[in-house]
Image 1 (cartoon, rainbow, N blue to C red):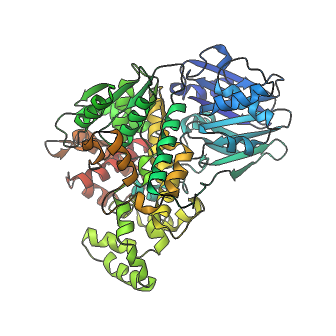
Image 2 (cartoon, one colour):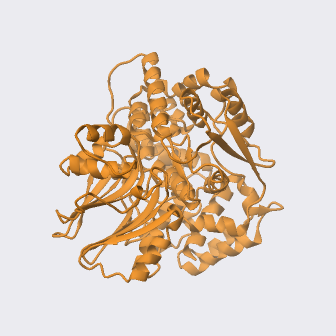
Image 3 (tube, one colour):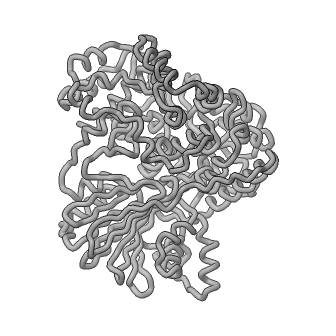
Length: 614
């Protein structure tokens, strides 16, 4: 796990100190070692977090034996041992034991067929390969988007990096947040894949790679992965056995490490099943970590302890009552772009504690998307009969409901106003709360309307008659990489630790999408097959427990004596200087002093936006 910065092009006339500062901006991603390599038309900087092969043989940027290919690799190649065996049998020799060297030599072994390389790799990664002899370069991101990769094209030059802040530093100025991203952000709380926080900096989409040739001097982006759906008819027991086998294997390959490995353990079934898989693999010295807040009704640490005791896992519980205002602001600012998932705060806090004993942490992230864990998925099954009605009838009812003052009815109206495919694609991040959108200046709002149909352009192209599968694919393509995975990557890297999730193995993603709907949703019960597995591997309280979600007591951070804190209000009022809002309406909203949970989430959205903009 590391961070890198790269420049491609004959015009790579970047001041040495400017480039070094750009690399310094992401030193938290790899504090163990820094290196810069360059040639006539390329320049690479690398910050290394030592996980595999702690010797100098794992140093990056890494060259091949002929000094004709150079790689910068951030992430983990989980099947590197299998690939290394194949290469060793073919007579290829290795200097060290890193997965980076395996990936580099595998590229050459495959006759430099980059797409075949990606299809044969199982991992979480963002990396670049510069083929000096061919005078071309590649950048790639893993199938599900676990690791980020940003790029910018200017004046026949390609800039790319693990984080936005280093590209901004390369430009020598502070890029302004794009007005186009404001409305989507206020609706969703994150920047969706069809938008960008900056007009001049883009994110490479998951499952995509880019080719850049010195002759053409432009990036050609291509998709290399869509999930393979298995339509084979199987019994429930057969699906369950396949799940067990895959989950244990995906856990096993994520335990490969030359540094201590730990586990984030909540009271839910996802992290519990990862803990159980570790236990079945007889892995030793795996320390579990969990955090709790005093007097919070959603505290799950008692259940986490029950799981730990059941499996014989060593669990460390961290108590946390307060977070300083400065620490909260620093966490929000670290994202470089508007991001309003408050669970980032607790993710940062538990990462900060866990790094004291564990440099690699396994998590349960992805279980909800792969096996339909969000409560809203049940509505897709429950109300599927609505699609039997003519679309025109549903749309007419929707238009009536949208104009009614009741928020719940209004949101039902929003959903009914869509066509049936969109209704399934917009799941738990819909219905949208438009409370904040009306605070934006009319001309800005009219110029940058939120187009719900945009999701069509960016979901994996496998829409079918299975609406639950469509919903999962939409979340895997939109919510997972742009909210969940950005949060876990940025917060873990902020504290220089590596997170790995077995549920984010692409084989498990394909398994979850292939399963019949009734194995995932049963009445009001979500993740049915995972609960069945939990019934075998975990205490009954865990297997049957209600989903709570990974969050924080937001009122602890934003309010005091049931009022918005003065320091929070001061930050919110600074939005008046951004020329984005109707300041009269904005002030009225800020001083409305509504401290309900739903409104505090909106206050946090505005607060996060203000921190980034100012």
